[in-house]
Length: 536
Image (cartoon, rainbow, N blue to C red; front, top):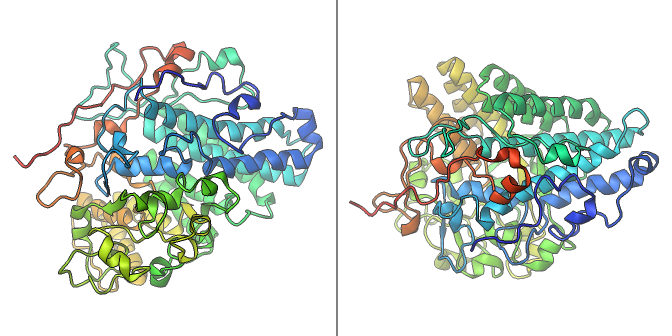
């Protein structure tokens, strides 16, 4: 399914907002306010800032079922790990391009989607940043400016970590053109950028991107204290800024800063880790945004919910009579990952135990019928809203997390372990014993093993939340899907030696044509370079 009609490139994103309306519904206004009008109208600023969380849940293309906003991007990252397997076939699993690492090079529509959606999100933030002059703005407008800077930092940090070329054993950092693209990220599109500049906009180096993101976080921190309403946590607050600083420091392997900012985020968040009941409740399990630091909230008025198919619940909730679960596109935890979880860890009850398991009668199903119909290892983590598995307009008016305080505990522990393994070990034991498994003991003794154990527990905690990809890539970990008893589809049984080449995302070719300075500076195409494991 090649794409021959790519609508927009980042070179066009600096043009007037109406050009973007055809791609993401209900996000942008049909008439663009000028900077002067915005400065004079807090309502206009509020309208533009509202487009940011709306973009996170908006439909990109009605005919492409992986195109459901930030949640879809998170799911793409997850299926590129060994943690999440989809039991389906190509008729219903729209994410097979990434899970099979097939046809994910420059010419393909799936590559177009990832690139364009991310820059649409950038544009939503730039509209606010370009339209608010802090010298004349009201406090409310300044607060919204802080929201925009925080969101821009978040999305650029995600993009930088996805597109940065890191060494691996299958593709070379010196691409076919002979250019070394190691540590190159993505072009930075700033608010108010001129067309000519956008069409000659190189990939930022890791150092340039880190400086840009840090600057955005500083700007956000300047204005977010003026924010009086986070709109039920769909807007970030100062705790989220510290959380983003912690993520940024982890990417840069500045573990002193990562530990510091993770602790600041924990203290500022003023929320406790989710309890066993919070996690396993059949009506409210992982669908209540107030339990998190930052999230995306659907309502029954959103196009994504009226659509039924293109939203978080449709894909991530197996216990439904609507959406893709009804078609058999079940989301599973990888068997190898599941088997490593201790039976005393209540989080293991977030997936259907295989027949004969001592946990089989402890797993809380929404309805008894699902105990029979769902395959082993099927996720029960994300429940439909109110536990309603029949009325999709109710069940899909759910929420999903962008950031949880639990992530900060694991960042703190890992960052500490890189500096002092014994201290990192103590931190992860403290968290696990108090919040997840009273009998937990970290048996690792060597530094690398302690770090890996902390990251593993983080993977279990954040399963399905789009974060594991970044740790696997950063730490040069292998992905193993082909083994005896695997529950990955035969075409997805890919094993790597170290970080997968497919975790270096490729820039769509239409962008290269629109931004010629990128010519010869793309990442190597990893499509089809790994052969599925067949057992011998």
